[in-house]
Image 1 (cartoon, rainbow, N blue to C red):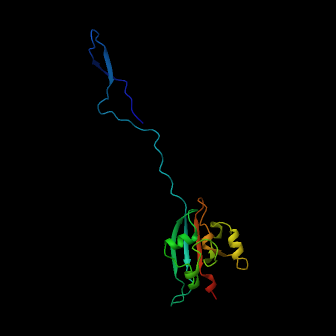
Image 2 (cartoon, helix red, strand yellow):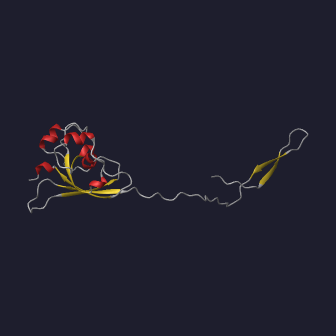
Length: 163
């Protein structure tokens, strides 16, 4: 937004027999312009806290847990795990996964808590997980959050190893 002052400085200009005066705008010294409509700082996007529980207990009997945060509705669970270097696949899946295309079924996780913070099962999941528990999901098909919700999701990695 520019400031306009209504003060003009006359500047005489001689042209032939005429003596016209042209007025040029002049700025006031030390004048300050304020912008009245400054935008408010935007609120941070909602976040989902994720806890990834390891498939096998450690020496003391406790399961390892990896904790991360993700912006709600922005990424697939597979991408979040990959970005944070959290192991997703069993041995076979490390070698034979489809790269997130939803055509192999090797990225299975179990949602222990926070199912309501994820998208509904996709048709691909319904196909691959037909005879599996409702809590099992394919990480490559699971969107974490919906851009409006926030909360906590607890995920069991490689649930097929549980006994």
